[in-house]
Length: 429
Picture (tube, rainbow, N blue to C red):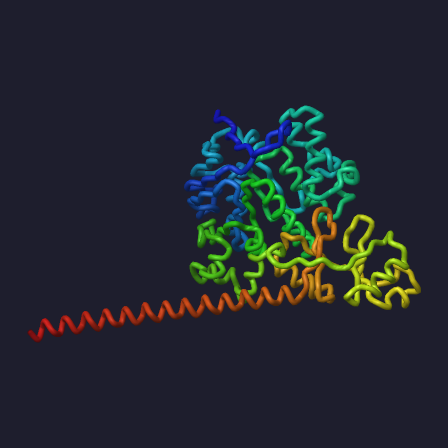
């Protein structure tokens, strides 16, 4: 029996438990053929995934992307080919042992309904016979990592959570045993668009801290652009149409099939390549619900803007208050102002931020950190300037590409003329 693949270790503080980082994944001629089928479901897929990168499989329904993913942890057994993780051939090792070294997150979280949040997260560490104290500490750590208050969520059941909270717990469970590899099969496909955006941001933040190797399946090309270091665009039977960075696929799709996935508005899709943290985040006048009304009045009167941001007891954006709101609401915060409908994190894309600005209709969007705490704002002028810069860069790139093409055609024409002239001269002589 093969040994469990060795897991690289990340640097750690003195006295802290080791933390694994990502491992390489090599797929060599991976094939799946079901009995009675004329053609294989997955046909001879070969791919090298670097340690610590996020690779996204995207393709039409039924192309075999989920089947390919599930063969990596052998939830589906390959018919042929090899799988190497961290250099170790895991094709014939005990599949149960293999799965305990690989995190797995699926759509609708897959939590066990009869278990509490803590019991769900602790599942694999307990199977691995971790000491009870270590398991308890890991559960607390994982809840905090995915932005859920351990004291509030520890004893809840899945039915007591929102869809987004369930997905966060699902990710926490997948990471609980500190695996080097995390497989994610359309994990955010069953939640609303706003929650999906925030979960994507959370995954980006986690990956920046943890450096796992993530293989992610989606049918949403915009999601692939946002979270992937590289994207594998798959045809039928998981044939690879293009495997490259999001920017390379957007600017140079390999063929018409890939262009169909990119779709119209490729320049605007590039907004998914730039993060809120890459543009200017400014401070904004704030007050809290615990502040005296007179203090809030004074901030509104003395501020350089016509409105102020009201934060809740946890420091999260709650309402936009404008001059006159408190007077019209007879001095009551309960009826004053406009609720903040959406926020973005520093890991959100400029497209997310632009959509949030348009949704809130305030000309700006609040930027939040861990557990939704206020960090600043991004205004529509900053976002539009970034859009214009991207569009101008695309126009410049298109002009340069056209100029290069014209030079190549001119050089080819000149060469053909020279060749014809030389032939004619020899003949005449």
